[in-house]
Amino acid sequence: MENNDEVLEAWLAKLQAAFEISDIEIDLHAVLNLAGVAAHSVVRPAAPLTTFVAGLAAGLAVGSGQAGEKAAMDSALELAKKLARSSQDESDAATQSAR
Image (cartoon, rainbow, N blue to C red):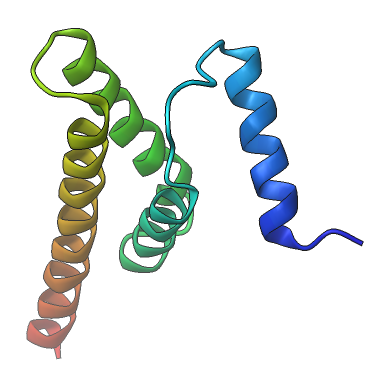
């Protein structure tokens, strides 16, 4: 029986092959970490939305020549995590001031 990591690695490979981007290195755990931060800091459905927008932003940065693949992805993931955590901090502050 396969564990989650094996299933996700196989799924990632299948996705990359279908989109003809097998040569691009994707840090699966960094993406999943971002999804977790977004899900717990904003609301659960923020996870896929956040990872999609971060990936789109990274792709646009690479496509426009602003950054290389790794730098663009690292930057997009980090900014999205920072924003998600900031959203949690704002929500916590609003909850505290309402009390």
